[in-house]
Length: 496
Image 1: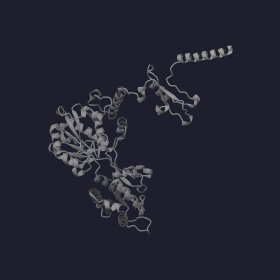
Image 2: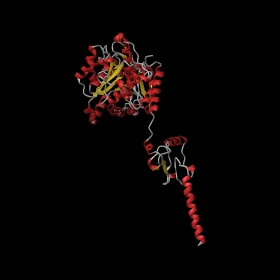
Image 3: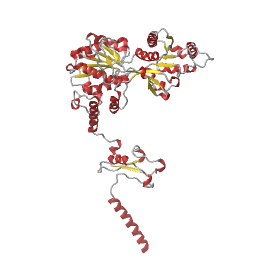
Image 4: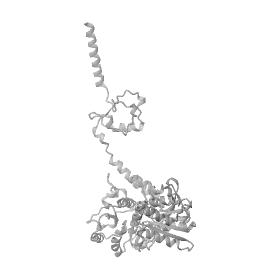
């Protein structure tokens, strides 16, 4: 009996000691109950720092949360080393939804970006960072400074920007808009204002007329398509307002209209001229049976026919012919003068393929099927060839196509990536230059249109003249194995 009492008392004393020890024990920020040894659970220093930053409030009540619901990205534990009794303990339930980033962090990032712009172009901003009044979580494109306010715009020198911000071409329009924002941040001042007009919707001529009358614009940037340009052009022509359009229809160009787009005529001229320079003389032209096909064929024939020793032949294919495979094979066979007894093609030494991506990818493999080896018969293409699928098509290896390689692309590339998170391209570069030129034109209004004669875009290297012509740094590229590109230097035009 005595011994039983002693055992009972010892058990009670042991339990009391455990309770006292538990009460005096310091609270741990991270509790992990795991039978694995410490060596089996590794947390990098960087991730440990992230964890420590999360637990910032020691006074809040504890909340136990199962391991499967949180910190999947912060701690990585191999499945074979996990056990079911791991628990993470948080002191602030709100922090499970993510920490609020300080406004100062975003403000600092914006200031650094603007500083980079200043250093990049080695020019002073005409308006300071504080004057821009940037706010946290506010997209640069939606600054009040750029928004249309009818009761105040009379005090500004306005630039109207016609872009497809919605609809079919919205991806191009919004990218150009971002580039215009950057040009305004770099070169703008408090007296110049951009007014965006969305051309992705129905164009109301009465509204456009009212827009010109109310805003009295000094400069026009855009539009993106020929159809919209036709509607805007008369209003700008009446007051001799400069237009920098992204349309590639050079037929619309005149003394107050400059085209920043890469026209079909310019594309064909670059590759056909390159082929002629390299001694090619027997040309085949395969194009869609539409206006675009007629344009590139006509431009090609004009260049080829300069020397009477050259010869050419054209094949136009309609959508119906493309879809009827039997007729398509028959037409190509006749056009190429294919013979099963000949292992190599002899009729043409150069073949130009024009059209959409789908058209090109339909025709190119069939040429190879009819013994047209792109290593020996030079395949020429338009800017459409600058596409990953086309560049990786085996039947188009060693083919040539033209591109506009911006003169100072690297200067804008890193800044664009840091601010917008994606990559810049020709249209974003051209948009930036359009903004810079528009701002400088307004600052030199006394020169009128003469200001635009021999002006050069700082990024693209485009050179303008007073007749509406734009000289572009066109490069002819050759597709190599695995889609890599090399420059045909003998055929490339630069503005150096």
